[in-house]
Structures are given as C-alpha cells and as structure tokens.
Image 1 (cartoon, one colour):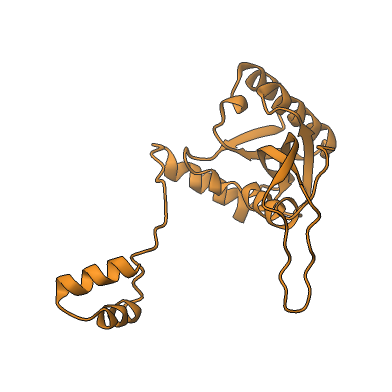
Image 2: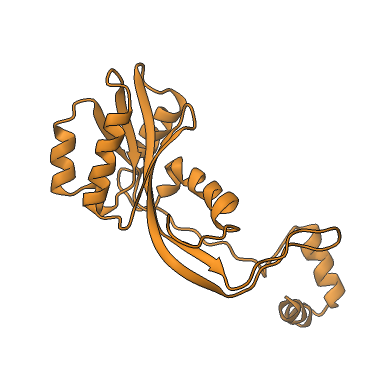
Amino acid sequence: THWSVSLMAKYAGVTTWQVRQIWNAADLKPHRLRTFKISNDPQFAEKVVDIVGLYMDPPDNALVLCVDEKTQIQALDRTQPGLPLAPGRIGSRTHDYKRNGTAALFAAFNILTGEVIGRVEKRSRSKEFLAFLKQVERQTPKDKELHIVLDNLSAHKTKEVTEWVANQPRIHFHFTPTSASWLNAVEGWFAQLERRALYRGIFTDVA
C-alpha cells in the first residue's frame, strides 16, 4: 500500500498525505482485490429463477432439499494442547498439526426447517452419492415430493444415478448454473460448520 501511495503521489505531483485523503474520501482501496467468476451457463437465468422460486415459494406438499458434499474434511490434531482465552490474552494453538485421516460429508439441507440429513463416507464418488440419495429417500415422508437442488458435479449425473432417479417419481433434480454453486443454500450451512466446529476443533481420528 505504501508503495502504491508513493507512486501515485509522484505521478500526480502531490503529497502522499493528499493521496490518502482523496482515497479515504472516495472510499478507494486499490490495495484490496476481490475475486469473482461469472457463469457462462446459457441457461443461467432460467436456472436462477427456478431455484430462487423454490426458495421463495416452495411447491405444496413438497420438501426442498439442498444437497452437496463437503470433501476432504481433515481430522487435525495439534502437536501440543492449545491455551484457552483469558483476560487480556487471545486463545492460542500450535501452528503445526497431525493429520489423522479425511472424511467426506454428504448433506441435505431442508430450507424450510434448517434440518440436515447427513452421511459421512471415506470417499465422494457416484456410488456414495447414490447411497446418500437412497438414505434421503428413506428418511423423508413418502407422501412428500422431493425437490433437490444440487450442482453439476459429474458424480451427480452418472448413468446409475440418472436411472435410479428416473424410477423415483417423487424426486426432482434442480441443477445450479455452472460456476454458481453459491446458489445452493447448503453451502451456507457448510460455511457455518467450518467456522463453528471444524476450524477450531481438535480431532484425534475421523470418527
């Protein structure tokens, strides 16, 4: 930041203090950068309208479930015990850790109740995804249609999955646009899981 301020001041023939004042007044922060990716899905608008419509006005006698996998969850244990919060002292932990295996979490987030149907597997292939779908089908009321929002992962579109879904008349898939998995509400739940439980957690094994 100091380098860019000095460069701008020299180019404009003003002081660095003036550059900072102008940037502050205009709320300019050229040292910051935010990444983004725009979907090139030709059906982007239609898919957004479809999924947002499910969120805002769910069909009668139906459940809207947002499904995805959180892969490569690491069971991390620190090499030494951390120190807890205390007056005038932040919590601390060692920078190094021991890896004790990984797990994949399949989750179906009910947008109406916030309830989650989950399944932990060692891997996240089509085989495990199909097993999870069958679990979801078993654990939901048989008189309810299931509208499932999910992304375009290849494991979600294999022949085995497609054939099974074709024989389940109450299950309807709604795919998010490419490069727009943020539209899937379960991603927010995964983010909370990471922040509240995984990031600060100490795990001696996958179980």
